[in-house]
Image (tube, rainbow, N blue to C red; front, side, top):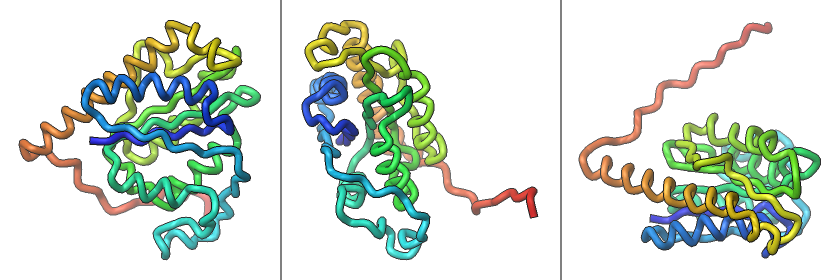
Length: 207
């Protein structure tokens, strides 16, 4: 089993990475393979609603990692999406990345456990978590929680490592993710499959 973690910070070894690493260490200790995918600092194209992905099965823009992440997602069993907090909101780059990812390949995430993690110096964390969690909810993912909201505080990795409650939250998140993955695997071995999809229905009140 494998969990794919997205580091949505432009800093490869910054605060968000520190939080994700704490969860990853716990997952590894539980026998779960992990990979932290680095978005890096390259420019991020937003979704332009061109519809290309409906026909091609991938985003039309192939230069910033979205399609690479989608390919890795095909063989991943769980996901943790991490973002820094910018102006009491997730990073705009993370939102562009996730919008294109889920719009072009949302079916890859259905019925898989997922979690969102944010890092902030001070405030804006719960608002950011709310925004990011919406990608999971609409994609039929099983959202994984912890003993507190999935956040860490600090302006540097060193300060994050002083946030003992935040690090404990990350470790518990990793433990919960590992447990859910093992429960899903046990259920599959006993003939319990994911619910069959219904034909999509759209409600349109405005004509």
